[in-house]
Image 1 (cartoon, rainbow, N blue to C red):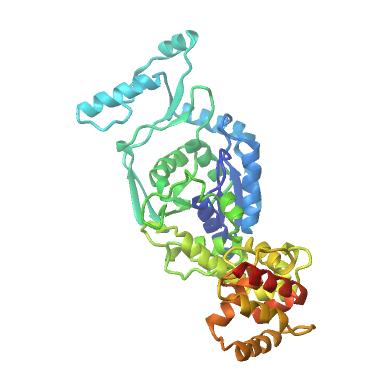
Image 2: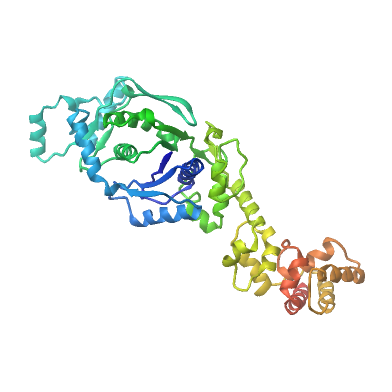
Length: 446
């Protein structure tokens, strides 16, 4: 097995791209195959080196590596050679219509009740007419002459699929400026690089039919390729997944604090019968099964993703996060706070509670309790027995219990209504800081 992930470096990766990359990578790794990263960068105007670098960085963040890498911009001679082969066979023909002329033709065909496909008028052009037009400064674009009949394949996700080629316009493979389109270059690469399995989004189904025809024309065998098309993602309400806010971009998810293991586990199971579970890519690959993918669109729900993120963080041992924690934060701190994290960035907030300054909160009616609590703090050293012993004594002397006792103390000590178990957290705060906060909260309660 040899697969490829082929993004265009014209922008940053989003979750739809990542899902396709994960599917290809997991299938290759589970089968002991090879994973090719191919940058489809023939659009010189829109392709940017910073996007190419970002794609590599984001894939590594997900835990995905590659066995080979190529850039289409380095293979222009191979595409030119394949194009000449098609021209010689009469399968690639020049066209001179402008975009305005093509639009007019489509409109006229629509008025006549005909499908708005290209009418192949350029095939009637003589060599003399073409030479004269070129001499007058016109540059042709080149279309591929589709064969009759239909392209058929057994799709790895969608089942039996077919594309009726006569119902489609002959695709443009070379622009008037001489640049090659993805429809063509992808086929040349898939044949020459020995790609066996092509896994991509459902929006490429029609492309697959066209590209099978091109593949046969350049000497490849489309029957030796396996195709699978994953249905596109929707938002949690079933609508189109919007990228306008950038909220589904990998960079934004990273900035928000989503762990790569949560995202990989979620996207690998999304739209399938498998239960999502966070995990490293190598672990997820061991159980990845494309046959479990649904033929229906999958809903990308950030709430489900965050639930997996919490699960991953809550189970992480200290050694896995040691280098990511604030300076001075140790095993006891991590063990105390990890169960309260939705996102790793919240660690900084809890470290400020332990080692920094907060604004203690005291409500009217709690001043006397808070002063008594400050005065009755036991001497250090403290351990997990300190909190229950101290609060038991306070309950006996004040008559308070439950929420009436614990909430005012938590607010004064941490500034929050909820948080880590204070049995483990109070010793991290320390006596001096705890006393100062209790007194400050008592003052603010007056």
